[in-house]
Length: 340
Image (cartoon, rainbow, N blue to C red; front, side, top):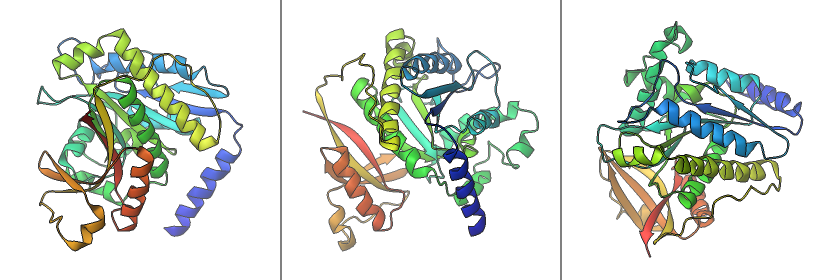
């Protein structure tokens, strides 16, 4: 297994070492054709995400030495594995899948950003299962997806053994996207999460899946129907991808300035999420002394624990690295709005 992993890493480095300086990003508007995705009272997910992706493409093409590929540019059905295949064949540097969320609870709202992984949260798994259920529309999906039943929670145990060599860069991209969503939109931040999405499973590059908003929330659906809102969502992702490319490649690309950062009646604070448990954790134990202040949120049937409270993402990131060194390898930085 170790030899196989080394060969994979070497092959990836060799292939990407042969590329020129062109930065390749693949945009994947979710669903399409016979698959409408999530539906609201007015809109279908497939319409919104394609609109945002096409707007995003125009922004990205203002960058030098960039190649932008869309998995679909019109209302067609495309199997999930073919979306990943498009990114792999084009040796993409980043894969961005764009979606809208839905919930049986009509008051749920906010954006979420996912990377490939197996989280213990029932809520995260539910989102992934909902997005993955489209594979039942594909021919021979049982063999393509290794016999995994997209509607069976137990079947996802295979993902618990996956170790992605692209996870850190995927989290890096997700963190930057989250920051720009916070700065440019009024949407609630529901955080960065890991879940077993089929569309991310077979990509051989850093990959993220963005859930823009909940189309099942009537008020948020009305916002998603507005061209001005879709334009700002596309612009927020664009600014994030410019910053991500600058960090990864050492470039100094300045984004086209279109929208100013929102002035709000809130400050942003940063915390480090380090545990998600069904049984409450005794945070008074001495081993958590350096984790304090510790806060907790009840999310579904899980208690989610956070350490620290920082005014900048950089400070929180340093604390995250320390928490990871203490054995909490899935720790991530999240942000929260607090009143001024």
